[in-house]
Length: 319
Image (cartoon, rainbow, N blue to C red; front, side, top):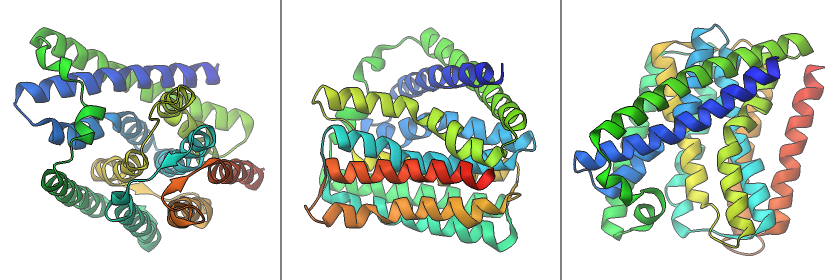
């Protein structure tokens, strides 16, 4: 029954996330916010909502290992699983912009998070606020750079213009459905994860960095694989890195501001954080060696094999 609760929770999170994105974008159009800003802020925040609700629910339920493991595991899965499988199916070309701003920001936040957690074994309000402020500064720089470069890529990819004509009634209904689905989805997912951990004798940390993290990455993975199989543009590395930045800065930042997140399991600092930083760091040599600015099948296979090793070692170390 625990798996059923977890699966139901994941389904509701996917549904809730989709409705929240659509309603948020439609609402933004009504306030005459530019598509560029909508794509970089509103859509990004809305797509991080499932992770945010899961981490917040876990922290409030007294399961900080799930709150931290969800984010750390999602960041590892985004690179190892999603990027690995997609690149294995169809090689990806890397935009030069990726290593100028996005990648350094992801690395900086990953390392800062490690030292924040290590310093007092808790992520508190001040540290959460600092993470949120860093995200605001990052978005400000990103939007300014995009406007100067006249970059319309995010407008065509991320924002659905048909939502401009959405009625107020529809927007309200979508918001209610999205909010309710996210609330119950996060509650059921956390409940199911805790039950599975208890029944299998596995720590909540292992369940969260593997099963919960993979679950919250499934929508992105499915969309990317389908696009890659159809030979369409799958995912951009910028989108995955952006997701990792939002996971740390907004998901953990906001959660810590509402409910401090203590580090109860030493493996989070001793193993999981190093895996997350390692997966982030490996992107630079992969981007330039041996074929410059391309992640092909061999590199994808390497990332995927590394991810499988991470999951295997997580369960092995907990047995």
